[in-house]
Image (tube, rainbow, N blue to C red; front, side, top):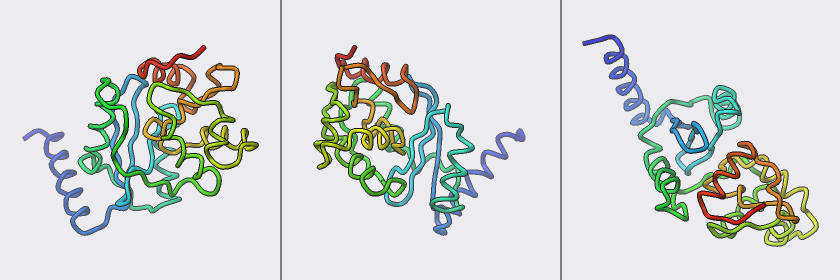
Length: 191
């Protein structure tokens, strides 16, 4: 048996034992995607974080340990359903995500905005003002921009479908090219 295989087996056994003993509060894994590597993290309540590589995966994990629990473990199997749905989305076979989402990293109006973002249908876009209206505060356009810019679960909660009122893309936490790629994948018409 080679050393890497032994280490993989040891890690798998530790993950299984920690999981069985209820010692894993945040499980994570990484996947490749058309917008680059993504870190996925989940709790017992659901998907809690999707992070682009540009954010620094170590920094994201440190924040999860600080804000949720230090019991963070690389336990890929716990996120198999999320990985499968994202793969289906990127291959054009899925338009809506069914996995549970844990929005504990968002609070107040930001959370309200995130709860309304799935109302923007696949392949369509809405303005920041339009989403502010959906969220019950039509004047909170900047706050919608902040909520989108700090969305802890992008792609699954589709902040990429929010564009400027003049139809221009606007910003995106994964970068404008990632936003353009996601909207192109959905066949959305943007400037």
